[in-house]
Amino acid sequence: MKTNVKKKKNIVLIAVLIAVVVLCIVAVIVLLLSSGGKEKKLKEQLALGDRYLSEMDYEKAIRAYKEALNRSGKRRSPGRIQKRL
Image (cartoon, rainbow, N blue to C red; front, side, top):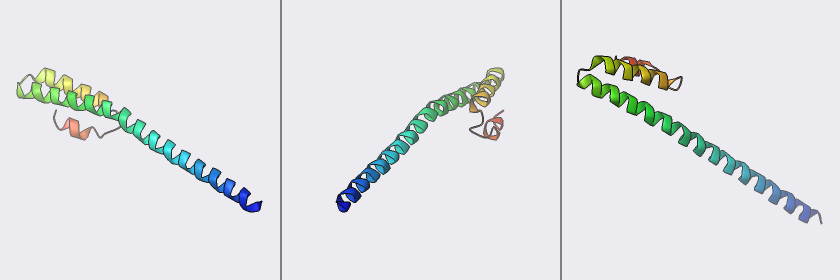
């Protein structure tokens, strides 16, 4: 009888561990997917600023880079963007 109880406890423990691992994997995937869209928009804004700069439309380039700075928030050091200004 004691071995059956031990086996059941082991099975429950393994099931709980598997559930925790699966939840962690799902959480990581959700975080990666949610930050990807913001990163894409930031890159698009930087590319827009680069385009305006190459066209010598400096006012629009500055506005685009400033918008990129606003979008970057705390995720990234603004130094990379400010170098372009």
